[in-house]
Image 1 (cartoon, rainbow, N blue to C red):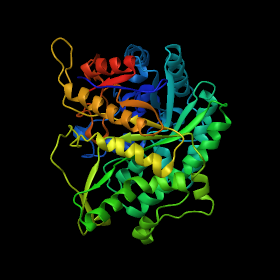
Image 2: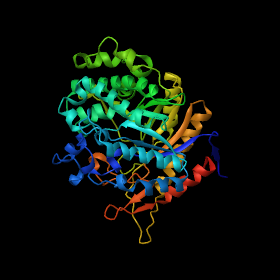
Image 3: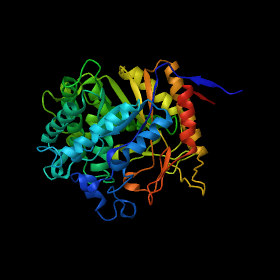
Image 4: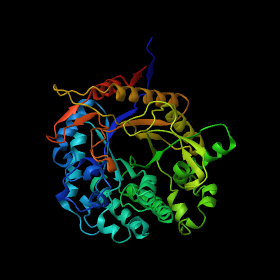
Length: 445
């Protein structure tokens, strides 16, 4: 007997993308740090870049038509900062601003609510040359950029997300060196993380100022729920350290106005410079928290390296990204965030999986593993709602296959298959499965 798990009335269903990953139109915007990173030999798979990507910049009407066919009432996308402000500040590119005006109008005409992310990793190169996020002034430039966008779109856009995954920006881009700008320095990464949070705090009142009573502002964080590899006190403590590094380091300033004390002690002299009013600015109340979840971490104590722990690889199913499929952690995460931080509302702003999809001669893509991934994670989400989590929406990552950062075009997350030679879009079986879930406002197991 199939189990039918229904979602609350008014639950928001949507998909998500990011500007650099889909837009293309490289010659019609300023240069960003990901353009520079793609030019750095050996950093991106086979030298792939975002010059054309999915050519969404020129094909957005076709893509919005597919969103309408899918039936989702919302679409989360990001603004390309250098498309609007090629130098990061100063003169506005009218064609860039016009593109986002046209996109928002197209969405609204098709009954789709825009959820706009203002920073999804494509910092203008001109600002990077001035110190990038390591420079405190960049937080102010971000606030200015947010004002430009709020003035342009605030009459129609009511849901704003300041940043996408500042943890990734700070630590993957500036400690591990696997993302732009590609540095490897703990102190630098921690200072950048602080400036990202500060820029969020500066932007929130600006976005509200240029909106109306319906305007809502939030931020999206990536989470890696930590589970100890054993019941030993050492592994339990190691899992706590991982949780501090990946989860609490950004959540605590946002919701508690302080950095977690155990990590402050662990970082020691690497701690960032924090001015007197910074933490109060960072903790300005927000209307919702965006949750990006892909996988958990199973952690063991291991001396040496960062924070004396290592993640393990338990038996189970893994995606093409080598991420464990573990939907129960999403339920646990939503409940933990609710109990520890009491956000007004939660949205799953990204959740999805990459598998090596194959396009058939008939133009079809059969992706049963992605369908099952969606169903199981939606079931976990619904169970969290019944247990009290204030989850109000789900955005599947991603609407379509795209540039997957350091992996280039070698990983496919989309509900829609993109033929990169012809740019033809092919909805996958998962597209139609998600379409059915949306229509029913329920998932069946």
